Image 1 (cartoon, rainbow, N blue to C red):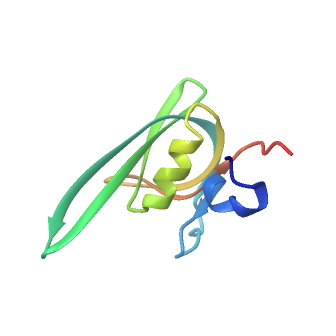
Image 2: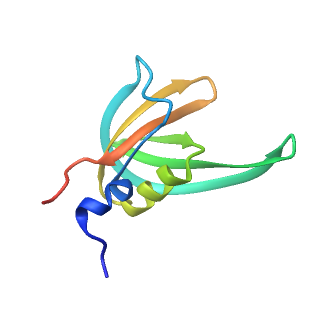
Image 3: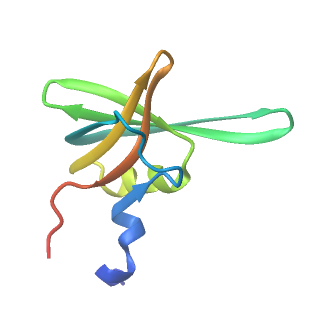
Length: 104
């Protein structure tokens, strides 16, 4: 059965535990794809997730190491989301994602 709404907040939104940095962009878009890449650094395994979000005709890959963020994006694939992200020389980093319009 589908979990109850109030018990599923983590399934419809995610925010980086480090918080959202000053200057982060806030935009609404549609989740188009989710990818992952895994590896090991200094003996520690890691997985980086890419979340492709379309903002009108523009598309942007947002990166995160959060499995929870990737799960939220997967659940909201094809739907409108609200994201917070920063752009760096190495790409765009996701800091928060949530359903843009939450039905009640």
